[in-house]
Image (tube, rainbow, N blue to C red; front, side, top):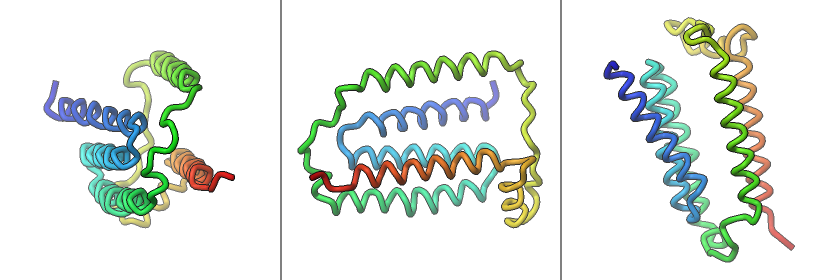
Length: 168
């Protein structure tokens, strides 16, 4: 094993562990702090992939702006900080079962792909930011992951609106 592979394994375990603590923690403020650790792990992945620009964007935009904004929103909203509701849902077992099924399906899908046969699209990384933008919307390169990320952000936004609305 090379040093880079060991670093990748350590960063992977740390990122997945902090992501797990983010979604299982009962304290909303602590979850926001663990979210910052998770986002920092993602930035470390970008560094390992030698994508310095994306790592800097991850740190400045997501950790420096969005996560800090979440922490301020949690701190300024006393209603969410008060423990007036139970933090667990009675149907937690259903989500755990669904998550387990998805993990099993993912493992089955990955095991059916022959090792090292997956070819990644090669984008020109020596160019400018305009080249990066074109590669994000090019049908041959990264348009699908880019659009999936936008749909996930839209779902997160709708979920935040549902959680933040006042109950009558």
